[in-house]
Image (cartoon, each protein chain N blue to C red):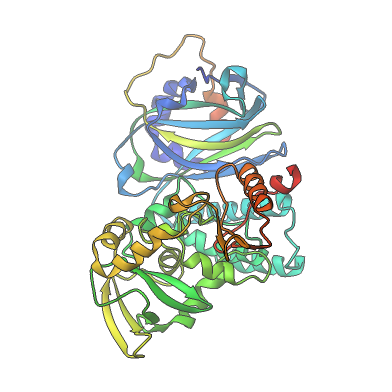
Length: 397
Length: 89
């Protein structure tokens, strides 16, 4: 492995004195932050392969390579045994090296889960998880892009059936760059069970209106599409509604606090999943059904980037009524300028709406005091759209 | 605030230490090391592979490329780290 450096980088040997300049330096000295990796802290030597290929935005002269370390709370040290650079393309020898590197990454992924996940076998037996790992590893027969590698890992993560073990920002969020620049499906959808309805039109075609049901895309029925997508998505246990709920969310916000912003931020959970797990076409032959007439249409819809979607959703007139309606909904404490509590039947019944965000314990305390002081008999807690909370609240209160 | 690191040669490695002088906040210490290069192009390379070992608090490693301005002054007492970096070449 090391011989390539001596072969391909004679300048390294000629000018090795420059490598005496491995110096401590301030991290602000780098303006092109690259890939990131967590560190295994077991005192053993581990191999970390950190990706350099960000695409066209990072071409050009490479004048300095830095390694930036972080520690939480306590001082500490790390021993660096070697640093090497792997070429991007070339001979089969290099391909072999890259395939080996992919396998090494997968081994680290598996080791991290097996060592650190607190409930790896809670819903899936050890035997079945090992089968999932083996099935994924069998796919690592060639060099892979980060996107291809992600698709190998996704079903393994999903098999754990832990909604909190999922992809987040990865390697400087390169996946987000890929998804944002792709021509995505131009409709933000809302799912009712496994049926999909248009919530907002993120394209420019004003024939597709909110409320229409999407039946198929590019010749695949919606059930077929979901069959490809859902095995790659994480959720707790056997819960399927969470997966469907997230397909209607703004993809950047997995907590979905900004559900009512869906469409306005460009990316949607469904559009992203379609790009990642189904296909990456420029256009979408989409079959839709009008709910009240049951008429079925096939539309040829152009894909949109995330940036285009965010603009189109505001300018396409078919979205006007939905956007107006969304603007009146309560979002968190005081959302839409409304208080978190309202009354029916005089003051006999109180409706406590979503209380997420803000100073939740104090707001809850104050609202409960108000309900008691009014002698309210009935309380309705409206938790729709609330995706979870913090354990600390019931502990503290 | 300074976020310098301390470098030390060990038998088989270059030890990078984050100390109180590396502290950025009550919960975060950070620092970096770098190598100046010449005539390389980023697009010709795919990955940087690092062999590393720790049992301490260092929990994250990130790559950085290129300074805002070219040129560094190499202190006379800079540790001869090249031997450690090339130990397995």
